[in-house]
Length: 116
Image: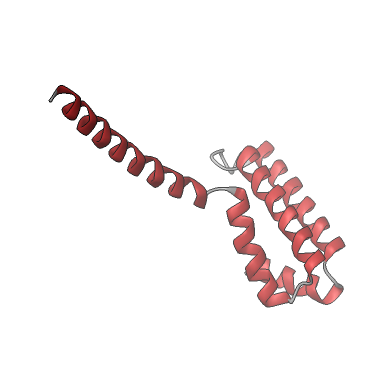
């Protein structure tokens, strides 16, 4: 009888622990730079008709941009001069990467999309 109760308690603990672990991973996945970059890349692909190489390069640039934003800008005072300088540097790096990757027409469309 003691073994049966122990097995039931263990099963209940395992059941409740699994549910909370799955719920935590779902909320954390949406904030990951790769997930955000994948979504943005898919949107840009629809609007700009990117080829395979462009998609890969744009994805990498967007991941690097998201990581930089999380490290240097998010959660900090946006009015701070050093944060403003970091933001300009991160945005300039993304713009340079996009300019090297996209055609002239695609780059102009991308600039119009980012200014909205």
